[in-house]
Image 1 (cartoon, rainbow over the protein chains, first blue to last red):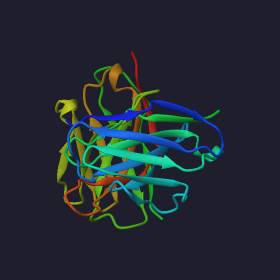
Image 2: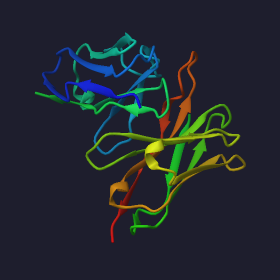
Image 3: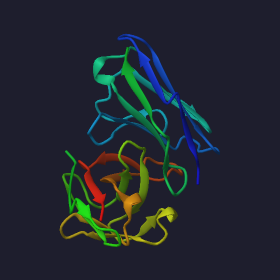
Image 4: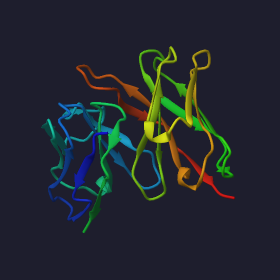
Length: 107
Length: 122
């Protein structure tokens, strides 16, 4: 199985700060990576597919990129509604696997 | 707008069979991979498996043959059965839609159901 490692596991930042989450795959996965946002008590929502393509309605404060084994998700200006846990998922080979999550909080 | 609505029992005893169903509203049923994912309380996400409209399945080997996913195209529904459950199977179970985005990538999940908490306890 491909192991997905996310870091940091949690981050606390101020409103308006830039926040970057990194996801690393245990072997190359091309651009077969998705990012999800999960708010407490809710189902995850797709933010990004194919490493850098945004799903409908995702705010422009989010950016994403990477390929191979290292990927990033960046929030350029943290807003209260961005408080959530963010997960990456590889879609290169079965079984599909997720990173452990990054919890984003407001300082 | 695509919506997935799921249902099933929320409490099971050890050794029983977990059974959940998910109905899909909006969008096409064909051309997608209908997926189950679970999340133990306070933990991360685990992909269980997927099925397409013609019944072709792929499962996570970690579930050691206990899982069956089936589809009913006449109702735009798909189902999960997990046999011989134990406390480690306690989780929120999500149904979801997997979509191909081109290239060599497997389906990536674009829509999720609301989740069902299934607790296994004697």
